[in-house]
Length: 214
Image (cartoon, rainbow, N blue to C red; front, top):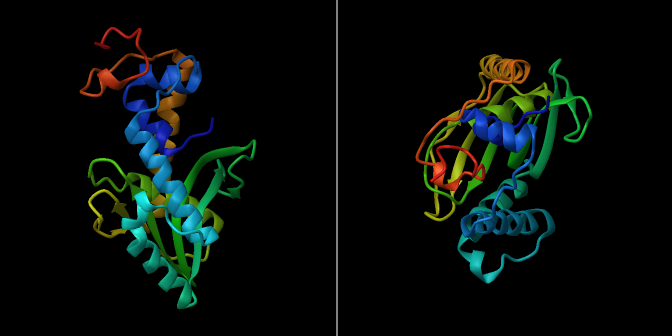
């Protein structure tokens, strides 16, 4: 089964995970916040990969784009919106490969020999959790085995600030966590075990038939 950070995050409520990623019988509703996030990612991608100016409503993010331009000017390799996949045997594969086990979209990757730095654009509330960055670092390591040190940080666009830098080089530990999540999901799938988990996010859950949906 193919996983991503986003899909496994939904597994915190197994009922929601089942309907969104197994049965796929509910639609993920779009919100203004989600639309803004998509527009910000797309605008920054077009600015950094295609050289297009940021639209007026995203112009305040130019300083971040200019800093990445500076890395390019220094001869570093910069990848934007890089889609990566990894097979179960930890070998690199295409994002859409039929044998892909884990996948992810890396917003910005800056590489230089055996080191790399990941930037992840965020438009929501500031909640520092390096899990997504760690998974993306593991995917990058599969595609670039020469990497010894990978660091990363979230860029909180609404606040126009960068979060702390995380060392993401514990690839073995991250792969073990990815294996654990895979096994838990496989166990639920085998046993048809999809109980709901009540939380403060229930009002925004697309599974409206759930007993915890208000």
